[in-house]
Image (cartoon, rainbow, N blue to C red):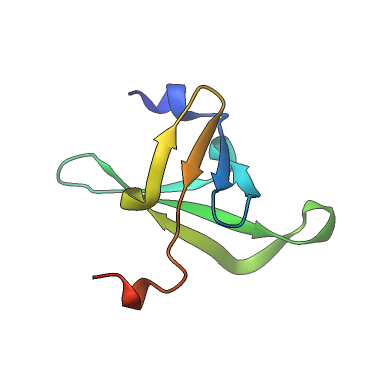
Length: 84
């Protein structure tokens, strides 16, 4: 899949049933050696869309459950320390 095909898709957290953002408004963490996306970096937005400094949600690629036509469904564990 190309990055252009991902752009514009809404990112939805399945556990919280909450829209986190749109892929075109996020940053990507890319592995420099193999070119694969490792994580999505989603800015946390405040009231009226103003960005808070330094706050972002890091979603590891392994937490993406489904990429559909219009949205990307993610499933972030409550506590990553418990995930083994």
